[in-house]
Length: 204
Image (tube, rainbow, N blue to C red; front, top):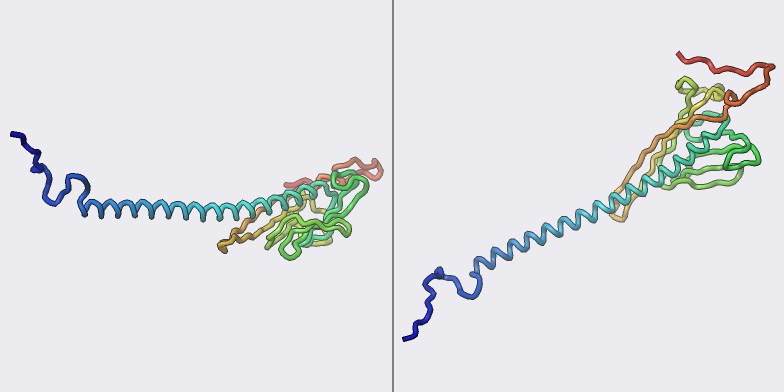
């Protein structure tokens, strides 16, 4: 006589062809937790990307502006005045920007922009600028603040702060400080023997 297989090995409440109701609920809960974790990771990654993009934008803007200011100050022979928010540098002829004549270049903040001016022509160097400041130092590193002593300035320090905001309203501030030494001040060039050329005062 043929015998039929029995299900004596199955636990009570189990189905031989699938999962129990409790196992199904547990599976759905675990699946939901995994999906929630993935969603959180994706959203966090997107927010981090937008924040980094704002920082990169602010960083690029401030570096571009400061690099241009520092580069041209290094061509200078002397500064004109000691305005902490308006740098004026006298540049001799033969320099890369204007080769055929000497000129005065100015750097200052105008609204949210860092501006370069030569004669009546203005050029925007950076946007989102919230602060532009300059400090002036002599050959010994002592800060010069008296406009009457502008001829003693040998080094200029500039500081630019930019601010950028992304579409989520997140704000990125970037501050960059750099220094430039005047390469073309009179001591760097030979002068006639009579009168003798001035010599820099030693720093002790």
